[in-house]
Amino acid sequence: MMKGLRHPSLVTRIAMMIGIAGAAAVVFGTQASVASSDALTVRDRAGDTKASDLDILSASVSVGARDVNVRFTLASAVRGDAIYSATFDCSRGLWQLAAKRAAGTTTFFLYGLTTYRQTEARGTMSGRTVTVSGSSSKMGCNKGRVKLSLTAEGTNGRPTLTDKVPNSGEVAYRR
Image (cartoon, rainbow, N blue to C red):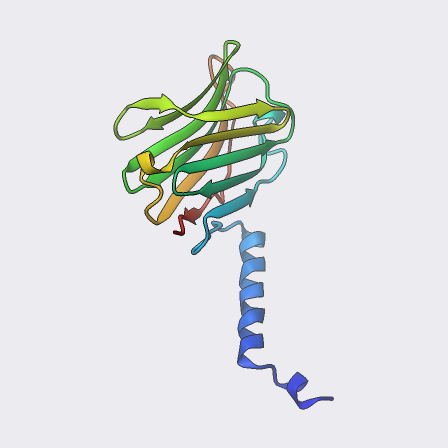
């Protein structure tokens, strides 16, 4: 046996500890966090709500100099009377970036939860995918770490079924 294999180097031990910590985070469902990146992907357990069009399987969030982009992947195709939203805690307050389909109308919006002002956002709803983008500079999300949560819920009189991704986490804008 080679001498190097019996006594792992410090770098190897640290790498093993990081791998174990990462596996523990996945197993125990702790918050996902990206310290020095501008993108985050989270996965959610399938079947944690009865309405499959509200069941978030995964979501990707990216923060750039101009935009915050969110992409939801659902268990089944989008139906009506649903809202898919990401709530961000940025330097300029709390914001909801959302896609809503209610009463046959689809809207995409950015709502300031501390300013009570709503502006238009961009997005698409197609099949099992919902995307929505809003201004990161307006939100103040282009100034460092951003805490977020992801939710899908019924609206417009639909029974109150909700899927909240428990490990939404944080993402940071990197210049």
